[in-house]
Image (cartoon, rainbow, N blue to C red; front, side, top):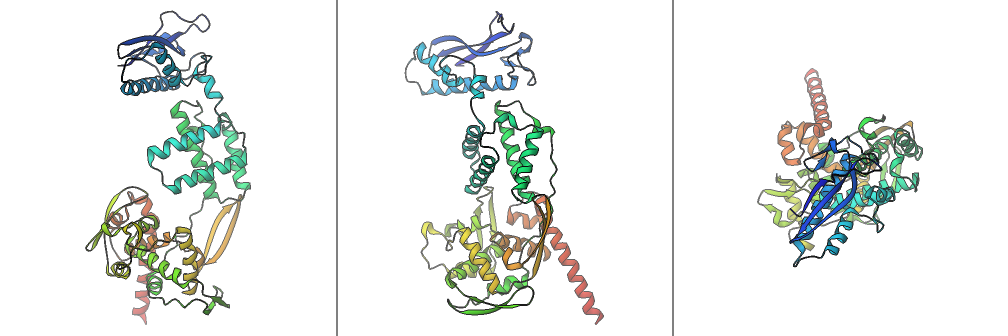
Length: 441
């Protein structure tokens, strides 16, 4: 091994604790050095500090010290492999400082940590975790939103701020900003995730997020999907030409007029949305579908969100959409035309408005701490993800077992499927009631 750790036999006169020393042996060049930490001799065992709850007299936890030991060991193992010739002792000393992130005057790492602020650590977290976990662009955007909310809350916030009182102040701020309670809960979840990482890295001793659980008044939102009749109507819908003035009715029966714009964009959107509804694909997977992913009546998708490899059977409706574009030459051998998610959502609302999807849907939520009830025509609430929801709801209500549907959709547990299963059960009850009423006529 390049590095071995041991305790100095002479305790410090100031703390009466024994300094931890490191013995370096790099390509035959040897050097011994302290690393800036001291511990009670009774808490040193097999080259590490025990137990994790132990804190030395300088206020540094065993978890943080052990993290530093691993950091040094990892740094020198990597450095030794990169060397082509023997290093000098001065080079080894420089690498020790790099590994410890120590300033020139030789102060120990805890002093350095105190000078690194909340937002610097946040950026370190985002950089490290996005690489380690392969975050999608949407996840990075979520963390950018979190950072913006935190900057608006307190641009000088420090890592020690978030005790129980600090958490409550941040939640109160988000509510005052008028965010929905579900969004407030999501932002708190990001903060908790970040502090879990800080604690694991030894950057904080704060474990308040393990002990304190604030209450959120989150109400279930309606699952927006198309019925079988609506889906088929959309699939076969003839979009009027550009400039055509169409007379429509709102959800209260009042007439109004709408002028058609960009019929071509709506036509592509209709095909892409229906393809998701016929196959269960998310927008991201539909937009990345290549012709080489399709083999006869089956397409093989490696999902953008979970990296699962899924075989999905193609029904005749999905194949008709693919056939419509098989002579088109798309970039990167894509199977379908690509429209950005944002633009597709814009077209989709116009399209569903023209198709007459005006069923009133009421959403109830807490916003800014107040209960808010709002009613919208269905077309206003339909987004690209409603295609995937439509597939799931229709498949389950048609009697396809949930475990089969989950193989197509990539859901890993029943909890994620429960809202759809509840809808399917309700649909079956309504169907039986309709069957009974027909018999009684």
